Structure formats: structure tokens, C-alpha cells
Amino acid sequence: MKEKFITFETFAGYGGAHFALKKFNIPHSVIGFSEFDKYAVEIYEHNHKGVKGYGDITKIDPNKLPDFNLFTGGFPCQPFSTAGSGLGEEDIRGTLFHDIIRICEVKQPDNILLENVKGLTTKRHKGTLETIRKELRRIGYENIHIQLINTKNYGIPQNRERVWIYATKKEIPLGFSLVPEKQPLTKHFEDYLDQKINEELYLNKKQIDRLIEIHKVDLNVDRPYCFDVYNKKIKKEGICMTLTEPHHNATRVVEPKNGYYRVRKLSTTEHFRLMGFSDGEIDFGNLSYSQICKRAGNGWDINVAGLILKNIYNFYYEN
Image (cartoon, rainbow, N blue to C red; front, side, top):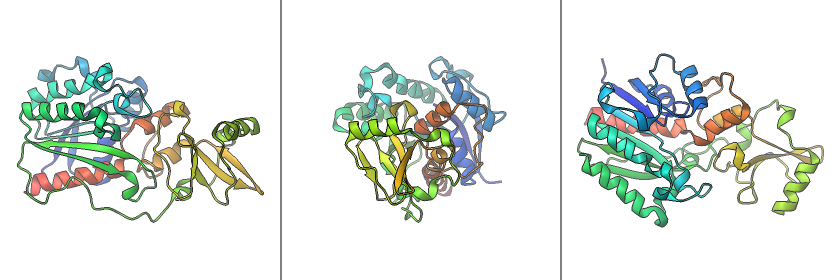
């Protein structure tokens, strides 16, 4: 029997690590997950039945956790995000990293894989990133890889840059890279759109006129494109902007219609295709549109995560 990752998944959302491990057939078991948001817990438990939930990470006693050799966590990104407050460790959510350290110091898993937004690598948060590195080393993880990886370089047309932090107790050989081999885009934004659209997703004329007035943009198009509201431009290269929580209202689809154009929100299935899911791979249960899309905005691209985990698995068990 092949060795497997025994996984504890924190800040779990819909279970990005769990889905990624399954998608790439990486031998694994998941012994538990930690998640605070009740809607995220609902969708996790709906899709990963039988995995024990440990609730809020700040309240977990690590001595009561089973042993595991892979710890995963996409710890909250708002403190480091350009779309959030950008306060770093001045924001109390920025200190949740210390709960990762608190648990891993006791449990000492062989592998730690963490994810956050690109903002963590900026000059403004250089001190925070260095603190993360120092804390990992303090508890025994000398071998640390930190890489910025973009979804659009791995076959999915979403410009989603995330920083991935891998720490291990095993000596990393020369030539190892956390970064998977790049894959060309063979499909573009319009290929990820639904064929049949729910009319409720479309903006009315008043809303569209307001959009044009505020953003001074020409929405006349000859094919469906992503309209990046945040940067006030239509992305005619066929790539979607970074998916965010719905309340940011940052992503729209612009499509031609009878010599005119229409503007709409992305559907739930379109959100998740752009996060690496195949149709039917995730069950949304009874969650609302807003809650489903919030999960996508905060979640892991399971295609990228799976490629990274495959690299780690091959390194860890074959070296």
C-alpha cells in the first residue's frame, strides 16, 4: 500500500485541500478540519461526509488532535489584500497565523502547506512574511519554500495570484520546486460560461447605465468577456480577473446580444469552473447564491493546489 498524506485541514472553506487531493488521486486521508464560518462548515460537511470538525482554530487544544503528517491552511487573506483593509498584523485576523504555529509546534507534522494572497509578498508586509518564516524555523521547520503562483499559468483563465508556503522537516534536494510545470491555456473565459443563463443574473438597463457612468467604459463587445469592475476595463485577452467575495461586485460578464450588449453576474457553476472544478464535482447543498460565491472567492483553486500537492507528495515519498 502506498504511503499517504494524513491531513488536518484548517481554514478549510469548502475543503480545497481535500478536493485537490481527490482530484489528483493522491493517496490520503483527512482526519479533521477546522472552520469558523457556519456556511463553510455546511458545504464542507455536505461534500466530505464523516470528517470530524474541530471548529474555531483559536479554541483547538492541539493535544486532543489525532496525529497527522500534512497540515494545510489558507489563513485569512483580508489583512494582506488590496481589496481588504491591508492592515497586516495590526488586524486581529492577521494573528491567526499564530494558531497555526501553536498547533504545529505541538503536533510536528512532516509537511505544512499554507496559502495567502499576493499582498503578503509586498514591501508593506515584508515584516509579516519574515515573521512567518522565523516562526516556522523556531518550531523546527528549517526547510521552507515560498512561491507566488498564478492560476492562469495552469490551464484555467483566471488571473489569481496566490503565495504558497511549504515547510517540511525533510531536507529539500537541489532542483526541487514547489512550482508545477506551466500549462498553456487551451480554453478562455467564454469557454467557462454556462450555455443556459438564469435571467436573474442580468443587470437591468438602469444598473448598466450607472455602471457606465461610474466607470467610463465602453461595453460594446463582439463576444463574451470578463469586465473587471475594480480596474475599470474589459479583459479582452480572454482571462477572468481574480474572483472575490460577491459584496466587492468586481466581476461581471459582458456579452453581445442582438447588436447591443448585456451585463450579468457569474453563475455559481461558472465561479467553480474557474476554481478548477468540473461540473458536478461539488454539491452546493442549500446555500444561497451569495454564500456559494463567497466560498469560491475565499477558496483554493483545486487545480493549482492539486498540482502543488502532487509535487510535494512525489518529493516527500520518493526522495
